[in-house]
Image (tube, rainbow, N blue to C red):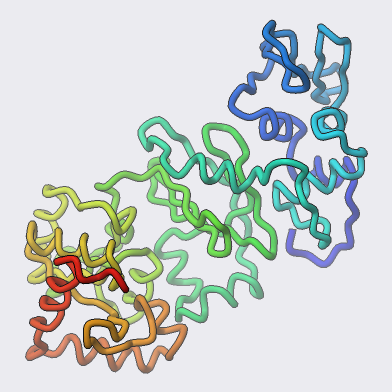
Length: 357
């Protein structure tokens, strides 16, 4: 999909990338049931008489037994949105983010990718399966994105980050990548995944739980200092200097006590490096009070704090340089470094004075 071949919008080009069944499922939505009658999405219907079936030719068609209408997935879209057939190609290309056409196309009523991703933000991990189709690393787009954080391909492979072409949730195709919308999947193993769209409105999709720590399987058996940070990106940045680090599934979850006990048994001290905002400070403080974690922040100049010009380590590297980050880490790791100032900052913000953060 990242090659130089010139392609044009057509049935064949679209169906070489996704299936007709994927298209039916995507636009019919939660009521989609292959091989079973449902109420027609093309009209008001109280008696299920609309089905999707596989023709002897191997192609998938719809059939509305009440009206006699039938056709393939593109015919279905012409009726659903009152579009010309070629415009249904543009609609599918846009909504599935296939990247065949470089021209913008406004969907008639809904932006499906965004709505689907929004709907899936609160999915139940225990009942949700995520499947992906990965792709090879691309020397241009992928390198441009990750190298600004100092993260190379060897680090990405070590932490099981996979460049991704398509994503399915509960066997429904949700989103596809293109050169303008790269997708990466953090693979935890045993079916646990976290999907990352760095340029998407809804960046994250995950079926992980609070006990799933990013970077946990890469930790050494024992160590001096462990850093709990907010993202796998920051975990990978810290790995550049061989600093052990983990990140929970989200900044707003508390790591379970049994997991923390294992970490305390293995490391002499645990620091927590979250964002210097309402959520980051609140949950850093929860871990400080409950487990004795040492809070650290990239402060932003407010409350008479130093302004680092970045909200986290990966941004600091991107905005400054690896050398500046190395100097900061060396200073922070000095034996005489005082954490009293970060405690004061944390208490100040937690006490309700963070309205302007």
